[in-house]
Image (cartoon, rainbow, N blue to C red; front, top):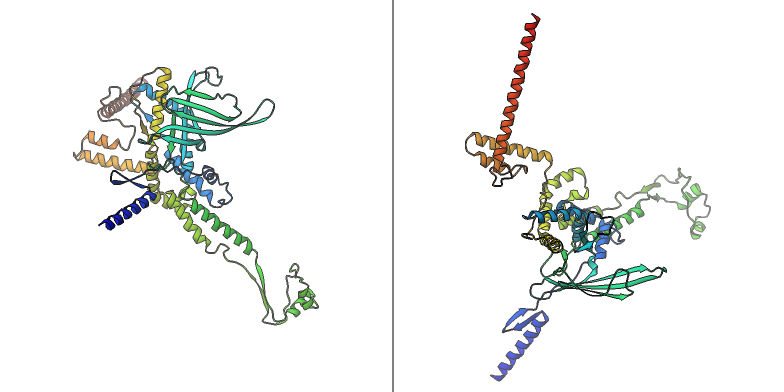
Length: 504
């Protein structure tokens, strides 16, 4: 019995050690996983080189990077914040309009780099001649992601508790001496600590300072975010191997083109010595070859052959790329499918573009909708921070900070297709109304989905006129116009009759 127990204890010990190496531990008689947040990050410098196509190792393949990122940004656009409080709506609308270019750059950088950190600050501009209309304003600051050294998070909620920012600053003093320092900032909900390693640059004060807001005014826009990852992923990561392969194949094809682009002369000779004597005046072919001499075909448009079955021909490569074109096409569609980007975004020929718009546009629409949903949380947090900072600094009380986002509709159809669809729907609703199987209210409510300028059939808001009243008003105006035109016509006829009577 003792030997059996010892053996069982040994097996349990080995099992515990194996599970520990895999990240599991025995707690309270059951095995639980020791959770560890993945803190690996995108190579931001590499992502920017791919986007700008400045890396020599990707030159012939990284041209796909910019259209993929920019097409997503162009279709996504920037959301419009909507809130019930009128004063809050005014503040948010003003803030978004003033920072429209930075908001677009935020979405672009998030897709390219994977991470964007926005720091909202409130700056005093009372003595700034460039902003005479404002005393203080909120500033939208985009922090380079590589400056965010670490994010300390709550172990339970995983929410950021402290941002650690590290940046290098260089400048010249009044004597022209080069200066350099490393600035480290610890930013929490109640504090901000600044420390310099090296010379303290002008305008920077070291020390511990209170954070007057009571929250961290930094928003992390994380692309393709996952709960187990601390940082986002670049849209270029998934297609990087294909861009590298495309570059290598294209480079090989171009090198082959340079090698084989010049035609090669092929001579079919039976008497080499006679050919050299007759055409190039070589008396001793053996000595000519031994000395490593060469022949020059310039000025020898006509060649003399000693035998009837001797001839000469030029050898040309029909396709320098050979099978590379098939492989390049395969890699191109790998990039299209992996990036979820329609091929017409890359500017392919017209027939293919027409097919791509109808077949691949739904894929892009779903991708854009997914991207918008992923950025919903950080944009709403941005709105809350703007309202909270405005409320504290301007002593304004808002009824709520809860904000909704409105995005522009993505419609792959052109104007003609939209007009034709509205026409068909309107004719169908008119026929249903004439047959007595649908009411005016039902027809208006259904048509409202296609025409954004239509209101509810009966509005509950006193300031908004219902569509029924608007229709009645339009009919009355039309009837009055018809009556006035009829009366005007009658007056003209009477004037003509009176004029004829006077002539008599």
